[in-house]
Amino acid sequence: MVSMETLTIKTENKFRSLVTRQAYTKGQIICEIPTEKLSSKPNRYTVQIDQDKHTEVGKLSALNHSCDPNVILDTEHLQMVARRDIEKGEELSFFYPATEWEMDAPFICLCGASNCIHVVAGARFLPLSTLENHYLNKHIREMMIDLLNKTELHLTRLLEQAEK
Ligand SMILES: [Zn+2]
Image (cartoon, rainbow, N blue to C red):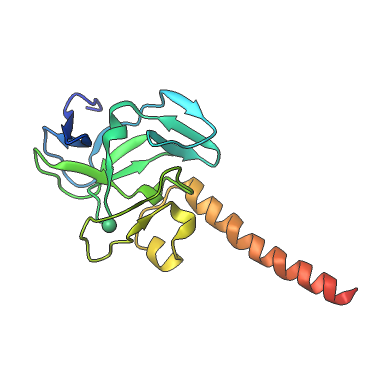
């Protein structure tokens, strides 16, 4: 069931994409996410799987970003899951900020979706009103909470200074 044999990397003008030779139904597990080489820093080929863990993901590094993606990378269970029904021959894509907090190589998205975020740089640069419409991995939710907790810390410091 969970193998990457049905996935092919397509290269056109040096632009890579990942295409499926098999159809999937919504919710179906497509493959496991390989954790080939772990690193504490992101690069173009890594996927963030925890707060300070990035991994090279083999073939899945050819997955492009979309603001209306057809797959989800569940980094907690290390599975790629169909977000909707997917046809044979379709390109697979996921929402990069669902795994990436702060990307090494931000870019402008031209996906054309009505909900396009335009600047893809990681979850920390997106408003909550955008993020709430997407599946976000546990480490991204945790980092968002950490960030919000720091705003409370700012207030505490301000109040402490005022008391002095
Ligand atoms: Zn977009």
